[in-house]
Length: 348
Ligand SMILES: C[S@@+](CC[C@H](N)C(=O)[O-])C[C@H]1O[C@@H](n2cnc3c(N)ncnc32)[C@H](O)[C@@H]1O
Image (tube, rainbow, N blue to C red):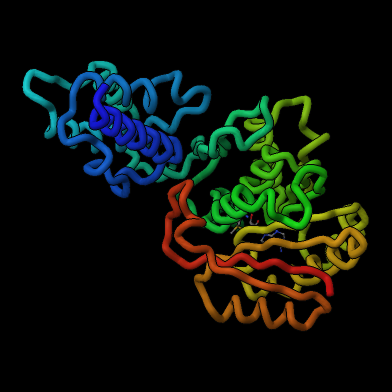
């Protein structure tokens, strides 16, 4: 094989890997750069590789994207491929059959219930980041189209959780304490993406908490989707925890914790004093373990963030923060360009 041929193959493999990440995350099809990811000349080999590595039952089992999403994805993919077919080449039969199958679904653009139904969203993790028995991916049952539903915002994974995931994946070995042996508590866990990721990268025990009962039920479903039965409860569990004094007697305030995490939990000024009560109490109680809280905040509103910092400064906690740069937003698709800041909070 010539050097040029090898290079082309690498480029095609990278494109297929990227298409797989985007497809399994159900990234809005009109945001996917098909024209950059599909080769200038589409042939049978490329289409077969595309079907086998991205679209086939084997590639997506056991939790494929929703048929309504697959239809939109395939419509644009087929459009681009068709324009680039080489002479005497035709569209791949398996891809066409898959597309035709999705056409029997109701039209999502006219059916509100359909677009708000939960779907499996798969986040591919870097290979070999996880325990040997674990697959390098996280599957979350989400209602991606909904910003908020049933009075809570925990139905989808937010950008701040993705950034927190990338932060832990790249810093796991440089944290003060390695994650191995660390007891982690997540506040306002939502879909529990962060808790599941931390469990997969070897935290000793993770407790995902949220103030909303229905969110907690959904978290258990997500844990079941990702963590083998024999490790549940022992290494990861869920519990309801409302910040502030409402649940001041909860065992969670008396259990030992090394790391407290939270993604996008600083967005509501009316909740901040309760959040800071909970953070302060948990960190002070575990002082002898040198605990840290790592909180990621999407910077939608400067005033809210300033208020969070102001209230933190009024406690005997200390904090540093860092903006997440482009290199911290590599692994997945982020729905917005809002800056994201990661806070590290400790006792003095
Ligand atoms: C924007 S979502 C973020 C979810 C998840 N951390 C993520 O980044 O994908 C905020 C979460 O905090 C929870 N929450 C809001 N206020 C809360 C409170 N006072 N006590 C506990 N949880 C709360 C919500 O139910 C919701 O799941």
